[in-house]
Image (cartoon, helix red, strand yellow):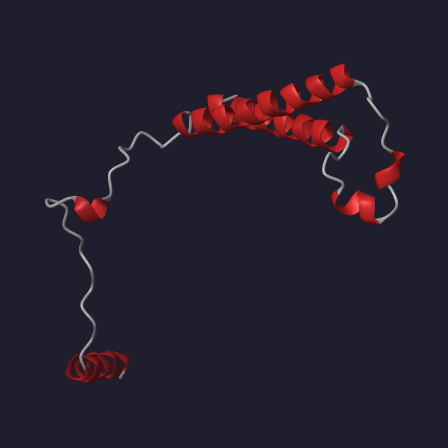
Amino acid sequence: MSTFTIFLALIVVVAFLLIVVIMVQNPKGGGLSSSFGGGGTQQLGGVKKTTDFLDKSTWTLATLLLVLILLSNVAINRGGENGDSKALDQDATTAQPLPNTPAQSANDAATVNDTVQ
């Protein structure tokens, strides 16, 4: 099991926990819930400690998710190659076939016909 796989599993778990924590929170600004009649059902005073815990856990999980994503980039297996671009390498030469000209295509076709007969 590679380090990248471990990071990937941790990212999925933290993302799921972040979704759960966000969904549990009560909306503070009203938003869509107030337009559907939910604006008057908020408690006066409420439970402050739960709100503080959910707020801190949201920020902690979001920060942890960002750190895990950045660290997983370091753990990616690059197959032993350096990460440099081949386009920037001055010494690298690429052998690309030249396109056939019409004269070459006719000569190739004549050669094929001669070998068939």
